[in-house]
Length: 209
Image 1 (cartoon, rainbow, N blue to C red):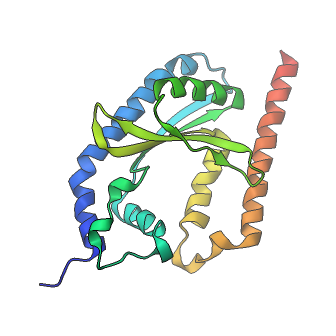
Image 2: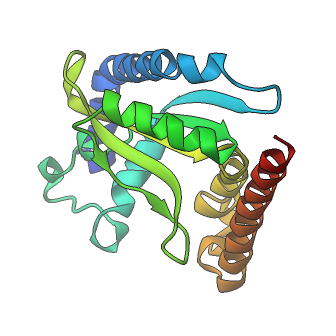
């Protein structure tokens, strides 16, 4: 019988812990929905707060771990060195908020709800915070599976859903698109334009009040 590869061992680990990952995702999602309920109830017609949950799929988790290794390869002689539990986002929740004033309020509430979670803000090419990201454990559910939640401007979050499949995880025929300087520049320009639109809209609303 051929020896099992690192990928085979990681697949077995994934499905062994999948029920626990799902429980963590449900726990964090439920906590976030509950804590942001006061904001949701107070939204105006044009404001939005959307909560989305994602459990990372098996092959995606393995590739994510592989990208974190030197040379993006696993050492077949040391399979015990690798575990999907080292990933910070097996369970992930994204909170999409519009406009930005609501985003800041949402971030403040959730930071109080998850005080021990580590911040890891998402920055643009100028070092300005685009979105808030935190990682940590839910000890009441699991002390092994880490989770992540993000608080993201809705317009940028929707753009990232497109960008994720076209640049971050493109089809093999588009290999290299994520590293192309022109495409990175265009992506940054889109993010800046969406931020300007949001700021302009908020200014318009404030002038009408």
